[in-house]
Length: 565
Ligand code: HEM
Image (cartoon, rainbow, N blue to C red; front, side, top):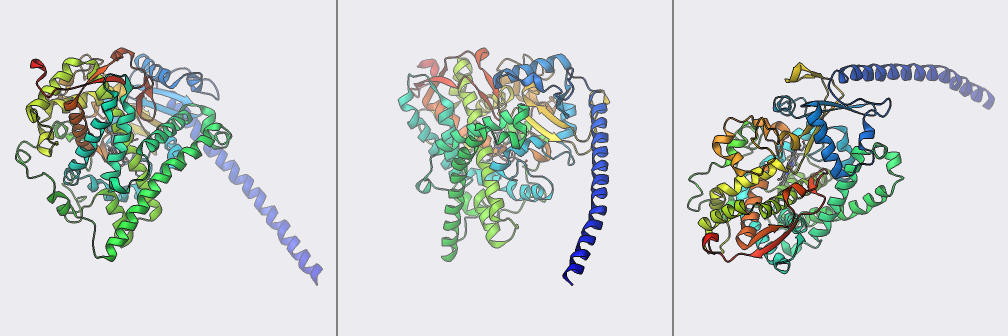
């Protein structure tokens, strides 16, 4: 009996093998054919675009060999000068197309179709999971709709006392540096992490146990590893990457980063549940803004800022005049909303998804503004005449008082706003934006058709220095943002926060925080740069930095107008 069963099983096994293997072979053949067709189509279409000669197998990958990150910026800028606003490059068989013409960039960024991030963003996954920066499809759409209103201007106004307190803390911490040369970026990183923890995450100083500084340093090193994975061909393969010391270092760094964000979420969840048991719900927008200064004199008058004018062509969802607006009462600060949504099931967000979004906001929200503020302080250290004008404006607003900054004051900081914009033009903290094309797309330049499957890289650094849009583009000149100079300029010639549906969700937060932070520092200190601007060594990391450090010296201000000092 058992023999009959065994024979039967053996028979079925051998016939299924007879069917399975030919089928597998056939399917593999089809797949290879498909890949070959895809590749040859990509090759044909890609090679119609201008670009440097490519080697078989390697493509143009060898251009990056032996280059330091700061050399790579110069290589990229040189090629852009040589080949124009559309450049094709091959990384192995991967087609990368660099765009720097605003008309072409608008086609990509303003589209509801080309919103998927390039596959290179996958290197962020062990860190950020599928948070807003990386996710796509329905997940991205629904999370964006939930998160964008948590950065509404009325929520932001309620953060002003926290921006002030933390800015004052920086002024205190800087005291021992008076007269010495130091890297101001360290201070900016720590301050921006602390501010995020208190504002978007709602974690008070008292309950913060981790050091914002350790977190910020771990983020910087993680960015460096991810950046190296972008341009070193062998590090792109997970199997090879895992054999390197970078991988071991990544595990250690992620430990530091995730331990902070896990603690933040746990502590917030605990408070939420304790409060819920007592019948206390998180503060609504009305409650949040009641204590803010939104009704101060001057705040209701001329509320139009330069940002309103410069960014009005972006067509993003940050003005909330549409169906995305959830209504005043329901609006909450970022982490409060996440936790409430998870507990009440209103927005169907899981604990794991909350973690991904917290990691994303913590990263995007601090490193960008730390770099931005460090560039501004070192640029003002070089351009003393411009710093003096900023100081005069601040003196007109505050006189000799050391009172905190109000929302109304920030509306009067017109010159400081131009300085911020000009610095974001010349030194955009996010120097590159990359997308993966799912469909062919025709662009304005020469009616080129960019093929599905290619990676589009938008080089903000180069775009922002196009002499067609900025006279003397390599000269730091805040007047580039005088109303008469911005009015006629192509909207997509200035995109430090990207544009269109995937623009930066924290744009308004960033600009308000920068104004309060910089105004407070500059009312108290004069910065002096020890390095001329031509010698700034730019490192086109994930976030643009100076590889030579943001070295400045500071001197105390006497709180009297400079001209009579
Ligand atoms: C000067 C400061 C900042 C600059 C220059 C900046 C720039 C950018 C840019 C260029 C993007 C698009 C990235 C891409 O497509 O790859 C972006 C996306 C994003 N930014 Fe910012 N950012 C800044 C501050 C902030 C702040 C303060 C926050 C949050 C508190 C934030 C949160 C985000 C998020 C969540 C995204 C992804 C949005 C999406 O894909 O829907 N950013 N930012």
